[in-house]
Length: 214
Image (cartoon, rainbow, N blue to C red; front, side, top):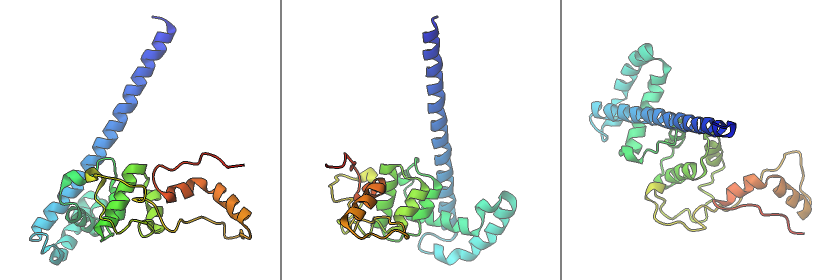
């Protein structure tokens, strides 16, 4: 076999290995999500159902002491409450995306409005957002700045249509150095260009910077 052919064969092995590694990570991540969801479901059932779940807090407090002692802080009182909320928020396991981590879902569990919660989850999937980027989007209130925020937002799995205003913000936030003063349109232009990537994410999906006009 020629050296070039060996190179190609080795590269194919590397590609297979990398694909398999990513697949194993996704499977492991989804197993974690599914187990947390199942724990939440069982906690709700043990407390007498979703209508009575909030009255069973003492049960969670009692069991969390034993679980933490045997299995670590990952099963403390705070997390057991989050697992329960996870199930109550997503009662259908098929709506839990395997490409998102528990940390992603944990960030949106505190959001009570379904449309707002769906918006941020959709954003994570569409833009492959890290948890840190998701936190930034929530902190900047990007949902509240949507032009079309009053439209009902469904999870992307069931999304039937998309318009240019579906993900557009108003107003658009521009990061400005606190030590820098903007005195003219030129100063504003330079600031925008220096933060062009961030500003494009504020506009929504599908925007790109082609170039500066002369």
